[in-house]
Amino acid sequence: MNFSIMLDKEKCKCCTNCMKRCPTQAIRLVDGKAFINNLKCIHCGECVKVCPYGAYTPESIEWCEEMHFSSYKYKIAISSTPLYGQFPKGTDICKVQNAVLKLGFDYVYDASWAAEMVALAIKRKIDEEKSIRPFISTNCPAAVRLIKNRYPSLMDHLILLKEPMVIAAMIAREKAKTKFNLKDEEIGVFYISPCPAKLLAVTDPVGDYNPCVDWVIPLNTIYGELYREIIKCDDKLCSYPSLKGTKWAVSGGQSESAGLTNYIAVNGMENIIQILDEIENGNLSNVDFVETLACVQGCVGGTFNVLNPFIAQSNINYILSSTKDESLNVDSERFDEMYDEGIFKFKLKADENPSKFSMKEAVVKREKIKEIYDALPGLDCGSCGAPTCYAHAEDVYNNESTLYDCVVLRANGKV
Image (cartoon, rainbow, N blue to C red; front, top):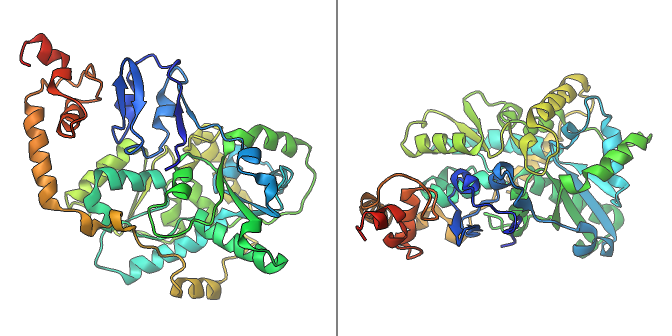
């Protein structure tokens, strides 16, 4: 697995903010410094957002050089749905697309069109398959990894439809191959990403499919260049986005684009965890679809974005209200063909299949951890290097720590 969250230990002051906010409890304090367990990390970017000392940063990617950008004959940029909301209100979409082209790309494919197609696939699958309720969205890789790590019993609730980034890359790549008679290896597809979780979706997808994306470019690493090009750009050649697909940039947009009415749209990791708890307890079986997005306000709040998510959401809403829907809807015949061929669907990898999950084993494990937890003071002070006493109990169970690491027990002479 490639790792996209980097920690500068020299800047770490052991404040515990990151450890307390990590939704999968992937961070520990070791020898006075934070340590990330990359097997538990879901790349949500919470640590980047909450660290007051700037110790966490998304991995620095010199994309032109490290990814051999110039070695491709034809270079495609996939623009994410929140991209246009990162520039001042009223910025011409054509200017944004042409600014991307001037960074060295040959073609810009707007992910909003793929998002509209995936929305249609969501609606169809919900209508066709009545046995699972609620379905849970798979657009946000961080939310999917959260389910895999903390709620394995809910894996069979995932709707198992490829995210717009993947569908967009497939369509754009096929267009380039057909139009210019190119081979796969001659085409480079780069996704301009709002968040670090998309890198994980490319390098280690949950499903058994090829994402068709060669690399992910963090938006904030090219934002300055884009902005400078936008200011001086007068070009008008571009393709306008799908307004239905553009709604995916904000929380609730997937469901609204799909025409759903019986859904819950939840954003922010703490809120997602509360809703997943409800699903696990069987309390939301009367809901068709739960849309989960790790970042506040949805993808407009991604770690790689530049603007405040509420400002970005306002900009997206302005685009939706002020842009004429001249570009029409997706080709319904083309969509039907792709859906019937199974293009949108995927299967979980063998090690992620919910059939591998044993409730009996989980109950036994939980009981043993509870026994260890009951021996701890329950103060959640973090002095042992774990975020909570329960997390420390899990570490003891996994032989990654000992009861003796609890300073309260040591002070009381109980270990």
